[in-house]
Length: 394
Image (cartoon, rainbow, N blue to C red; front, side, top):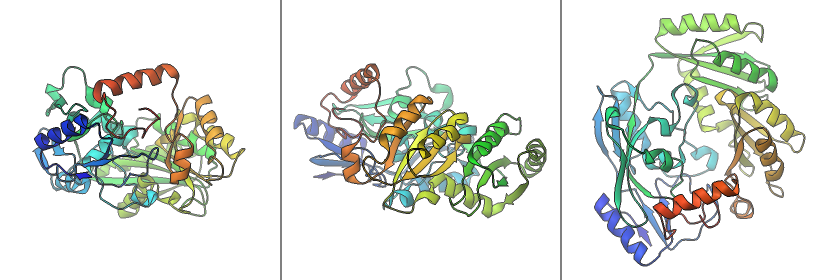
């Protein structure tokens, strides 16, 4: 049974009916990330596809609101027309996941999806001013506000952002936005091993020159030679000055090249969308979140256990890792190493069989699991929404 409400009132009524019948329900946006998480069995699909359209845009206030079924491309086009952008550079994982559909506003919020600019501008949840949603009882609720000065009280949006549709059916999101930079420039260092590359990225982020992207692509990941890249954005004269000073600071690490215009933009789109690890398609892809200075250390330890290809983002704090699916796709050593170094690991891409065999989301301590269960009980007491997607029983 597929349900596509065209209004919030209709969505609330549908959820109340689902609750009366205790119908387990899949929450769906654009359908681009349906293969993330544990495989679930549901009797209904509740889609936000018809909840589309921008409901508020105040360029002078730098605030935009849209229904959650709004294609992300539509929202970004409206912002671009006014010289503005979403701060957190949301990724498009269709190539990586081999999926179709269209990324939506709700999908971005549900996954707290954030690209390379997260280092400088924060994550999706940091740009989220307000949310409207239907809980598991069929109540239409809201949290936050539609202008920055009115965001007060308990910010439930931060909780719902990143819940992957397991707590509520999102209907509208409001974001703060930023001016679009006049230009960008990328500093490229070739041939560095992972440890030296991460050291360079961390050194660059400690300068006053404000990189908005800091990534490392080892040899064979998108190019024959290793590439360590730093992005600078803003006014052209400011970028040139900052690039000169930053290159001077980092001259001891390696010879630096400069990339500008569309070549720079294309490189960062590929990093944002993890394109270099999209093939071979049959490999599992892990997303490791770590303290930035521990990224290369984590990868070295994992490589001692199994072969893998990696891409570092967020100055080494985000490691994308592709490896064969044999046995558990390296789940045990990858998670043990990530945990030892203060991080965690999410299996973002894997076969249905693999995702049924292991926990795609990083297991949490018992006390955290109890807290998560309590939150789920408060939002969705019957466990209607995406049951078991993140963990069995939640």
